[in-house]
Image (cartoon, rainbow, N blue to C red; front, top):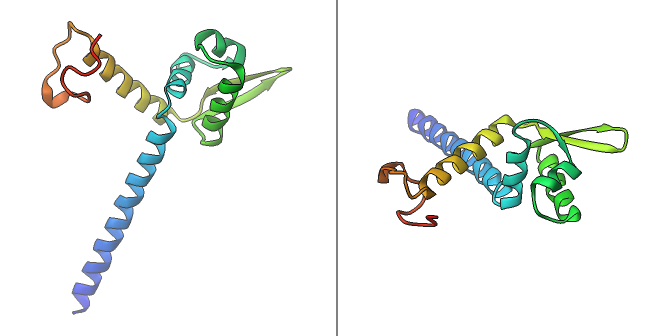
Length: 131
């Protein structure tokens, strides 16, 4: 009887742990679910940039850019530093950048009409969003 109770407790702990993993992954995917945030990460992959430089890379308004930068910063995905009147942003979470890079690269490959991607390796349904 004692053994069954400890097995049950271990099973519950394992479920709680996996629930936490899935909840954390969903939170990260939610954070990255806005195209502009993916563009920001992509723009910062080669080094830090200030807001003006990011606005040169990404078509949006300054208030919208600032809102998304603030969200990514508060979540720990981006870091920032001040240099006189400029604030420079950089990638703080390399794991988030790697996830973004992997998913976006895979989707770009699948959207390439010349690419042959096996059905078992696809993220997109066959024929979806092809260029």
